[in-house]
Length: 402
Image (tube, rainbow, N blue to C red; front, side, top):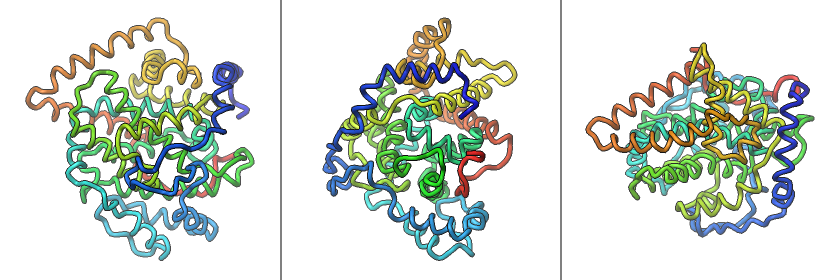
C-alpha cells in the first residue's frame, strides 16, 4: 500500500470521520433478520458473520495443499455450458462436489427464470449500469470486500479481475442464463470454488488479519449491492415494472445466491424481506478504506477508457458514479466532485429514462435494445481482456508482493 497517494489517504481519513460512529457501533449489532422471511421459510437463525461454506472450504483447502489446483484449472478451462459433462481426470472429491453444487434448488421456477430473461432483454441498459458501475462503486465501499479483493490475486490485475467478475454478472443477465445452453451454473460453481480458495489463502497473508473472509454475511452484502440495489434504483427512476417481472428478477438472483453457496435460510423470499435484510447488514458493513479508494480509482479509470478510448472522460465517469451511489459512498470511495458534470447528470438521467421508457412499448424496441446492450457487454469484455479469452480460475496465491 506504499504507493497510495497522500491525497487518497486524506480523502479516506476525512470520510472515516464522517462515519466513525456508525462503523464502530455496527459490529455490536445483533443479527435479528428472521429465517421465516427466507426461501427456506425456516432455519437455525445463526449470525451469518460466523458462517462460511462448510462443503467447499475443506475441499478447496485440500486441493491447494496437495498442489492439485493448476491441473484442475487446466481441465475446467473448457467446461462452460450448464449441460456440459465434467472433463475426465478431475479429482474424485471435486467431481462429487461439483455434481451436487450444479443442481438447481428444488424451489427453482423455470417459468420465473424465463420471465426474468425477458425482463433483462428490455432493461439491460439499467441493469448493466447499476450492476456494473453502481455495484462496483458500492463494493469498494465495503471494507472487508475491498480488502479481500485488494490482497487476493485478482487485486494485482483489476482489468482481469473485473472481466472475470463480469463473466458471472453477464451470465446471470443472459437470455439463456439457466437453460441447458447457458453458462450461469458453471460460472456460479467456479466462483464458489474461487471464494473458498480466497478464504484459505488470505488467512496466510500478513496483510489480512481478522476474521475468515467471505462469510455468508459478506456474500449477502455483495448480493444486496446487485439485485436489491438495482431494483430500488429502477423504482426510484420510475421505470415501469410489472409485478411478475419484479418477482422474476428477484427469483433469478435467489437461484444465483443458492448456486454461489449462500444458505437458503439467508436468501430473502420477497422484496420486503430483501429490503429489511439489506437495511440491517449494509450499514454495518460499509465505510472507507485506503484499499477501497485505490480500487475505485482503478475501476473508474477503466470505465473512462471504455467510454471514450483515446479521449478519456474521467470527470463524466466520476459524475455518473456519484449519481448512482450518492454522496456518502462517493466520498468514502474518494470520487472527486465535478461541478459541471454532477448537476448535468442528475438532471439529464431522469429525462433519458422517461424518454427510453416511452419507446419500450413500441414493436421491436426490446429486441433492438437487447442487441445494443449485448454489444456493449461484449465490447467491455474485449476491452478488459485485450481480446484474449478469459475464464474464472481458482487462485493459488495471494496478491504478488504482499
